Length: 182
Image 1 (cartoon, rainbow, N blue to C red):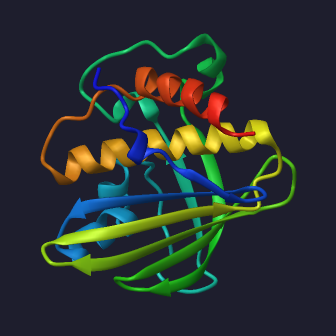
Image 2 (cartoon, rainbow, N blue to C red):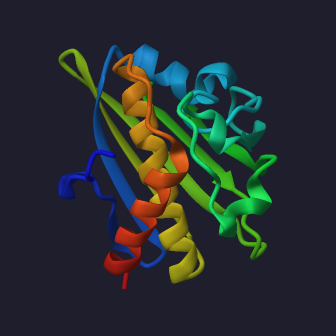
Image 3 (tube, helix red, strand yellow):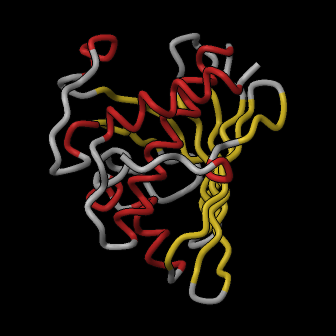
């Protein structure tokens, strides 16, 4: 498994808020499709229909073990997600191909919020992803390691490479974020 570069880590930028930046292969319209098209999003994050408008509902259906053709066992602590897991939310900003903001339902009953901004930089695309209103340190560690791992899969897909299995990479990121997030 490739080691994680320090510059790849998300940063805590405020209470309950973590931010990630990645420079991705473009063009920007292709990256936007990977964010908003269910079939393409299923290759790196989660499938699920997303109504393309402000106020549009969506559901993300996660199948982590299907993100790579390389097999790896699911860790015991995540066995409850073996058949998949779902998150619901609402699109609050839809500005193709530059800005997507949505709520993310949390078990606490208080929705968090995800903002994804895209900016073309030559033939590349700068992605900035900010996840706000995370309720506890444990949730921040889980969310940070999840986004870190999913963004790694996205990079591999956009570079036309087969991603490494999700779970080993997630556990490695979870351990790292557990040591970094206060």
